[in-house]
Image 1 (spheres, rainbow, N blue to C red):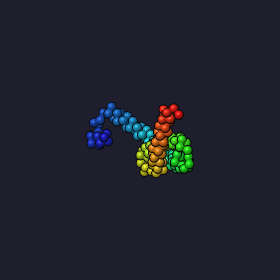
Image 2: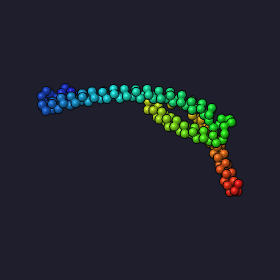
Image 3: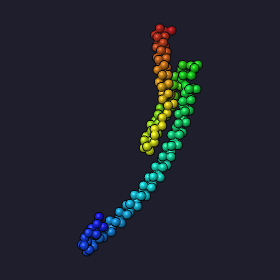
Image 4: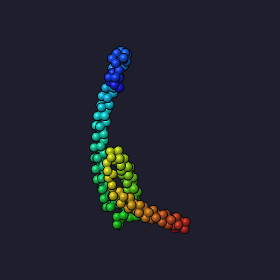
Length: 158
């Protein structure tokens, strides 16, 4: 703006105080621009570290989800021949493991949104959730039946 004024006004129209203000303002502006570039570089480096960490965490998470699914299929509550109460205990354990993974999934999903990544899907989580829901219904029913039988036995005094 000062350049436009100096160009269009006759020389000597601006007093010394105005010229001093212009000099200070120009100096301050250059300092702010320099600081802004420095902060921008710092944010870019930090962003790169977070982005790299997120990519690595998502890769590890994918492997972890596959291991949880594999463990569920091999040692979970729906394994053939497992005792019902052992299945109930295993179901509880896998429910808790899945809750932890769901929290991590939500965090990674937020990171994907921040960095504009395509959302990674985990079909193993969905299958395991469905299997756990079905097993939970089955074993909740089993536990209710056992409790009812025990209450009846206690009531009959046997």
